[in-house]
Image (cartoon, rainbow, N blue to C red; front, side, top):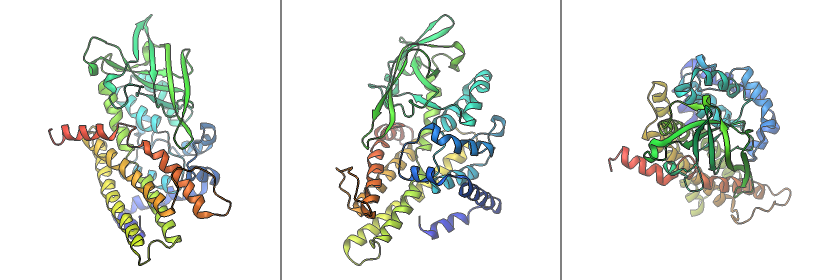
Length: 400
């Protein structure tokens, strides 16, 4: 966003919040390895081993779980402090925190997990030593999770899981999966699901890579063939998994609004457009580009305000509602609009991923943005497709 917009946002912060922001910025500037920031800037998928030193630095500051209360080992920050922290990480191109562990599994265990589960699993999430993935989607049950076919049957005081999960982000790096499975075939679809913790090293778990459109490996197929799960790794009550799953998805959708990411991308794209002389010209193309920037900025500012409202509601104890679908839907569309504008500005051939000639800065930036553009074709699908979000909004807000 333009500097004047940032100044207006800072005017809304208290002196304590501004001091906190300065502290976070100093720490990141001193501690974040430049090569790690560059790799993230280039859009590379980094292994857990490569990111681990950065996590250890954050953990030493007790900054790995900005959304956790002190009682769970988090910093106990306010919603504003969390937002500031996440914004500074994004602006500096720091690798993102563990989305599944920190933002989804941790809060879900806090809300519905047993004391034993919290004691066993939360410390590893907090330290970054235990990586999680999410086993929801299946080949024939993506956004329509009530149609999932993975089953869990009781056996010798535990459970046995059989089925297949699809598009499982980070499964190849994960230690554990939070897995939704059917425990009652005779109940209504939503009523017969339960939520489990699955050890990814257990016998019967097979992970197969899926290479995405831009050529990276960050999603997978996961096959569960007679996987034994301890009885203590059922989260909450049997057949109540739909309630827990919706709680988790509400948090995932808010996170997937990706306001900080879009702010960073828009600012960098604006700088590139200025560098190549595409903002101040008098011809119609320059005017259209300037207008496109203005339209996206207005929508992004509105989205940011909406996300802050959702975060504040969560802090007040309110469960994520249809607002989570609204911000996820709009945030996904904005991400795609930014990368589409980048290809237009940089005149990129969207059908080519060939390496540019050395020294051709515009072509190099174009390839970087093309990979980002291809990766973000999926943002309107994962965490609930846009069509599903619109249906939720129509039913819960418009009463249709």
